[in-house]
Image (cartoon, rainbow over all chains, first blue to last red; front, side, top):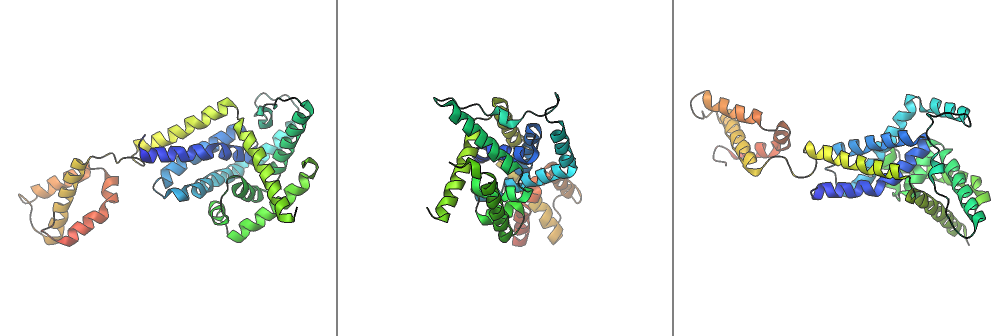
Length: 182
Length: 120
């Protein structure tokens, strides 16, 4: 790979895991999440490879959020409801629960491991149940570390909207995770 | 601890929990992400979208010279070689060149044309 390709490779490697995780939260499907992240990577490299590097992150996430929104429009909500209704039933084609892929942390205190896993599950549930735009704003600001202006760029909304979505998400998460705070 | 400190602590805890989660991704997911990333870059390199241009300077020089001749002929009406044949040769060379490369360098050709018949 040449310099330009290396820079692009480094950038995508730095965001791919979080992008995947965010997409799993949005779709509740590891397979769909991989497909959407792949589409976002291809779309990003094709459209924005010549933009300055400091613009890459918001541009990549804009593409990813558009892919997720398109996924919703294709009936994803209906599929999620079907999954919820089928939960507990035998369904070999169901996507594996991403939480089950988290290994139990080993340590001298098994009860602590259970608490940690419960807290993680509670966090995942809380984030997954946030409204789409609130989750977007919260994860891009808090986890990806985007500024308000870059988040607005990724979400294609105003900076004021970003702040509103973020503060609402924070308030909801605080309420839902109160029992799990140390 | 004031509100701002509590808020920061809460966000730090969430961030740490999410980071821990992705540090333990399933190996099949990890390898899938790596594969997709490499394929995206490879595909873009093949199309000449990133990395070094696919053309060489010698080719660029020949295409630029041919384009300049054609532009000069078009703007000044100066015949090239044998009437008809020179322009056709130039056109043939131009159509053989990568169209994307031609479009990308259109500003250069316009500038060259602005310099007049003595350019190049």
